[in-house]
Length: 441
Ligand SMILES: Cc1cc2nc3c(=O)[nH]c(=O)nc-3n(C[C@H](O)[C@H](O)[C@H](O)COP(=O)(O)OP(=O)(O)OC[C@H]3O[C@@H](n4cnc5c(N)ncnc54)[C@H](O)[C@@H]3O)c2cc1C
Image (cartoon, rainbow, N blue to C red):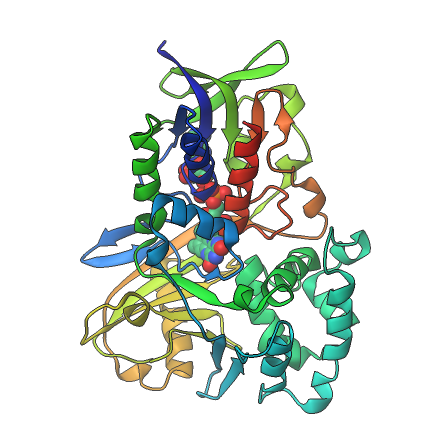
């Protein structure tokens, strides 16, 4: 049995793990990252297939992703993330009818959102009067934990309690909620939605800017973070699967792997998602309600077309199974004459069990109905990536089960997007948790 000792041992090589390792390496600590997979990056990664650069699913970043941007700056890749000045979202529905949320950049937050919402064509003035109640409700929860009675409500229940019409919900709130929470408004707790809305729209104007990677996801952070760590005498070991934690005298002192190796460290941080962490042989003190947290699926479909069918960076599809279509050719500056689209189905409980060909047919049906010109285009190549364990399913009651990042037991800290960062389980939450765990290690 091999054995190895280091200052800090981090389980998982996704955003949370790499942020934690980079932060500690920067402080001169000797770090070791153990990652079970071979691919570069955790749940946000990219790969090449038949000449196509494919993300496991298109990831949208926001101006309010401050911890993420701090991390990218530290590893020197911040210029691979493009932050857009305008705050425009185009929506298209079957039949080709369009709407646009255009939040003027010269107005301070949250008035820029109010102006954008007032400009939506598909929502009547009478329906828009509900925005007063929405504004008051959010201002009452501007900081701090979301009150329990609100957290127990679903997004649908909370919005309806504010008299926001189903049409208004369908045209703005539902696409936003499903995009942020990766769960349908009937299933998701209002807590994560409120946390995100106040971060995005109620802090400063820059927070609501959209940002997208100009490279594949792994190139955005995974390689550069690894280089950063290795240059400071740290190590990132792939295909090293942790199977248990070693406890001595009430303290976690090490990790066992499936290769029968033991790694010891002064401090161990797990960034494993809850459904992975609970498979490990854990000290009794670490068991808890977090083990009940469940995942929600996402499906990403990449299409290479023989011609362009959209000019926008991305569009939201209304009244369709497909939620978002991203124009990767424009985002990444890919040469023509064809066009690469990246299509997202969030909260994809119904579709995740279907065969890739069936999923392709669903997407093609939605795009043909919504994007004029799509039916004329030929699909040259396509790839479906199913992520059944994409994010935490933020159902009512789940917030209380998320452990605080950086807490655990002596010698051990929880981290990862799913820990209680005050944010929905996103990249930013992962990065916030990585910094929190590093400050304790
Ligand atoms: C398709 C898709 C689209 C998404 N879209 C967005 C988006 O638009 N915006 C956004 O902000 N977020 C999005 N997310 C969520 C985002 O990807 C995650 O929040 C983030 O990547 C989580 O990072 P993490 O480090 O917490 O976890 P992970 O990335 O899951 O890292 C944990 C790592 O631990 C490894 N591991 C597991 N078990 C073991 C073991 N036993 N031993 C060793 N290693 C192990 C895993 O392989 C993994 O690499 C999306 C996720 C998916 C899947």
